[in-house]
Structures are given as structure tokens and as C-alpha cells.
Amino acid sequence: MKRSSRQTLLAALMLAAGLALPACTSSQVLEPSALVGGDAAAGDQPSSPAFPLPAPATPGQPATGAATPQTLAAITTDARVQFAPVVGAPASASTPLAARLSARATARGIPLVGAGQSSASLIMKGYFSAISEGDQTTVIYVWDVIDPAGTRIHRIQGQTRAPATGGEGWDGVQPATMEAIADETIDRLAAWLTMRQG
Image (cartoon, rainbow, N blue to C red; front, side, top):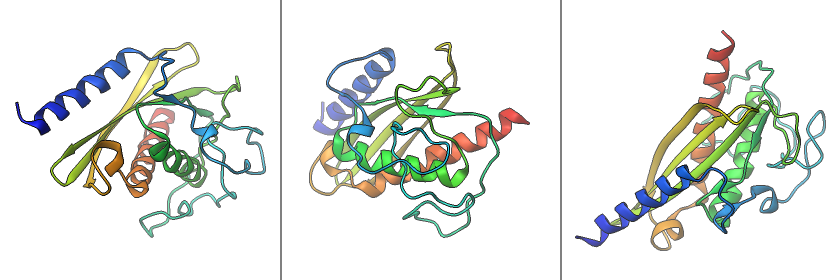
């Protein structure tokens, strides 16, 4: 079996194991709030959100550093979203992911609830894996949207491929790749929340 095939199989098995262990407490589970500095935004955000927000964005405006110049449509929702610690991604990937999720959620008008807060109506649990093949690295991600009773009610999944720089696996994943995943995650969550209310 070729090395890239073994790496692909290993990464797929690791991702499957992460999905089978939603209550995993191993060292792979990282709390992004511990990795991202900064204060919460003013307003109704909790004092210690799971993803500390940057300076508040005006709803409908792009998140800071957004890759696309178009105006983002803010949604109206009564959902209060909490991001659980992610599984499978190291600090180098979780940090830009967490910061961008916060900024994009603010721009899209999605209220976030801090870790340990009980007012969340939806919890996002993320599972990540990075696979290197040649000079490319693919990040595979799955977000389970969980209701307060612990039932999965929606899933957002996908993959992003980018040139590997600095090594294989997570060593080759740049912050821009994780920021693109965060943008896609929040935009798809916003679309689902809008459809759910309709």
C-alpha cells in the first residue's frame, strides 16, 4: 500500500473514531476559548464565550479579514449557538478557526453562547482531520448540530484542499484554510437556520 493511501486510510479512521466518540475527553479535544485571546464583544454576549468575539461587527458586513468582498446578509434568528471543543485539530488550526467563527457569526447575526452557559439552544460539535497527498493537504470537517436534549438535528460537513506548506498533515495547514472552513460553516449554518424558521 502506498504511503499516501495509508495516510488517507489512517485519517479516515481517525475521523470515524472521532464521530463515534462525541463525549471524548482525550488530549485531542481542545477548547478554542483557551487558545484565542481577547475580550467578548459588548452587548448581550456572555463574559466568557467559547469563542471570544473581536470588536463587534456591523450585521451584514464582512467578518474581519474575509476573503470575499461582498456584503454578508445578516439573518434574524432566535437560536443561541454554542461551540463545543473541537476534536482532532491542534492549536495551530483551532486558533484561527475559533477567531473566524466568532467574527463570521457576528457578521451573520448569529448569537453565540459561551462555554459553560446553559442558555444555548444549539450546540456545534466539530470533528477534524488533515490528510496530505503530494503537495496538497485536505482538511475534512464535520459539525454536528445538537439540541439541548443531546439529539443531533443537523450536520454540516465538507472538505477544503490547499497547497501544503511547512510539512505533512496539520503541519501543512495554513490559517487561511481554517478561516475558509469557518466562513463556510457559518454561512451554511445561517442558511439552515433561515430555512428552519421558514
